[in-house]
Image (cartoon, rainbow, N blue to C red):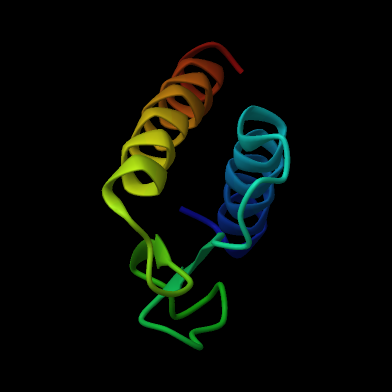
Length: 76
């Protein structure tokens, strides 16, 4: 995945998370390993401590956004 696509993916994750959570919490997606730049990132993780409810929402958001990106790669 290119650096540009990684940045778009992270932005889409956080945009959808904010939308679905209605801003109820400050947790967000960040590149993994923590502090990694897009070029070195191997994935995404949570920015800090999160309870089970937040993690469940994040998992659902990531699944949807990943599916969207996967479909756009196949047809784009």
